[in-house]
Image (cartoon, rainbow, N blue to C red; front, side, top):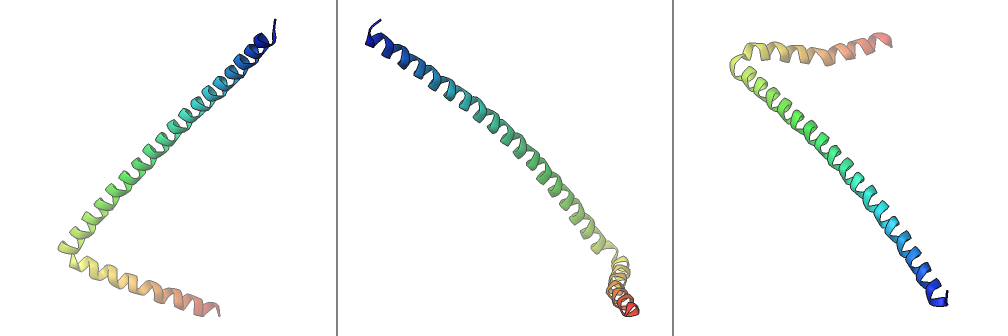
Length: 94
């Protein structure tokens, strides 16, 4: 076997190694893309659920404010008592 035959064997082995490396990289990259797609789908579901919950709460608050102003007055007075209660409890500990 002459020098040209040896060079051909070396070149074909090098080409085989490069082809295997590219194939491995492509397979890993496709798996990464699949995982990213799953993550994006999951995030989209979470965002959609949050939007639906926000819409329901908004509808509930709108209904509450339009129809039950007495309930809002009671809730407002309860909320206004909460900060005073915290201040009073901190004064008792001093």
